[in-house]
Image (spheres, rainbow, N blue to C red):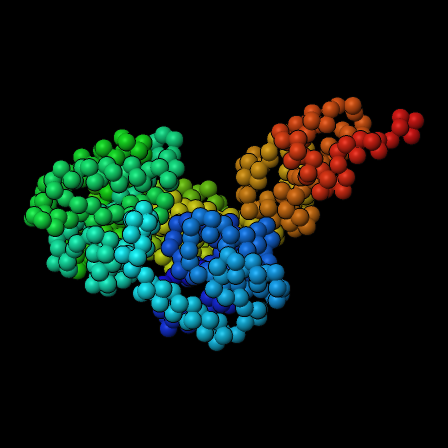
Length: 535
């Protein structure tokens, strides 16, 4: 059972996540988001059973989020949190199929009771539903049901084989605990040509896999756990399963065929056959095999029972000391370059796997904390990673994500150094950025592009403007564009559409909306108020 908490107040999210006894409720994973766009991304990539969301949030409120979920056929239970008991909120929440509605602040005991009631409702509904009731309508939605039934099983977090087999039999899939199967995991690493949309590539891949193996009297059961992966079982209920040597040859051919058909680079993970009752155990081994591909190299990866357990290669003490000294000196380019060289060298020698990379992340983080401590820096805003080594809940631990984590830490040291720099240097950096903005008002002017042009860190540029001007760089750029537009409206006869283009707006309607929001009047009204030439 999984849950997601959505609230624009980080303290509310962290309090609920820390204060509720999730294990007692039977909830195995808790996702969090601070706004609706973040929530949608998680929903599209992870199965969610219960959504707990605030109603009143900036940009998009909780009712709109649930409406989007229902429109996209996400049928999980929803509990609304709000500080206002408004009848119209309640009415719309019920119309959208909300499980309940609770006022904040909420006691943990009350929240746990409400969650227990919701979980009981979910389980009761799951027990009552039978495939015979739905007939053909169920089979039209078979892929979605397969994902729901198989996800925990394939991920190695749920070993209730008997219950899964009962559901599969009701779907017309006859398997027993002793049925010999192969488990495979296909991962899209990168697109060689134009990326195929998610609604398009899974059917192509599943059909290719099914056609490839049906010639050899094999059945395929598959689903997509996320937008870049396909998991599946290969089995034969009537005859003996194909031999492993032949299976390996088929996988090699399948990999080549899929890469050509989808236009991408793929990694395919599998193992020798095993009884279905061992699926969760084998799934964990293949999951580890995939996690060890931290360089995201394409190819066929097979977990063999005789495979030795790789020993962790720890970062040498002298290299960690080099990192510490360079962090103190803020030589960030040298740190990133040396870390990349070291990790790539491990990869060339087949020594870089998940455990080694995770150990490196931990050692580097501790080294950075030591450097920060020696400089007397405040580490409350220090960049952190999740327990599995990734820098957020969605990105896996890879070489690229590790280098990004290192970059965040080096940016932090640059920012801390900048905050303690002399006023003249701060003023000089601010003036360089301002001059660049003024000279390029006809361009989009993104923070990363500006920072790269003036040789500064994007995080530093963002914080510099927040500190010096009390507003974000984006707000500053927009204000300067509108001030320039006002000057042109008042002093020239240029068409308003031409003025919009001069300050970087191709869409006249969007320009007018932004101008009205900033200046309080429309561009046309601004021009009508233009001062006369005689003053």
